Amino acid sequence: MSQFEYLAVLVSVIVGLGVVHLLSGVARLLADRRRLRPYWVHLLWTWNVFHYLVYYWWFVWRWSAVSEWQLVLYLFVLIYAVFLYLLCAVLFPPGEEATDFREIYLRNKRPFFGLWILIVLVDVVDTRIKQHYGLSGFGPLLVAVWVTLGLGSAVAARSSSHRLQAGWAMMFFGIMSVFEYLNFRVLRAD
Image (cartoon, rainbow, N blue to C red; front, side):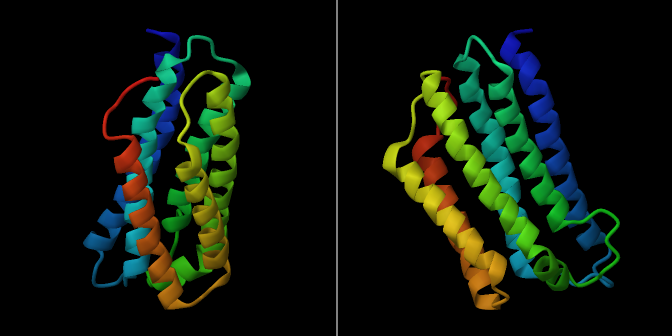
């Protein structure tokens, strides 16, 4: 087992727990559909987070090019996965008794979007560390994505407008889909 494979196991477990958490939440909605009231914006964010988890797991492979790992580097990679898992827990809170997922979504939107802002901030630092290790960056496109995700999440955290929440969920999906397609169609280590 290589050093990277050893370190990637814990990251993969956390990402896997996030996927399981989301799938369990959706399964709960399907199984108890007479009692539970889904909210399509919440479901779109569920898809966005699932999509992002898969993207992150795919992207972690780029780290396989690093031959020497330091603890601070590993902690940044790990904390990113932890924040992603926490997004899943905020979307489907453990032990939640409420039946209206619009209510759950609106009640938890501040921590949810606060986590997205933290993810952007960690990604900024993480990208600087990657460049130190010789991994290629994504230039102005990534900066535009960071600014858009940070500002969009800050506005969504404060707004209860259904239209704004729906628009931001759709815009997020579009931004990330285009960015991922342009940069990560092929799995490779730099």
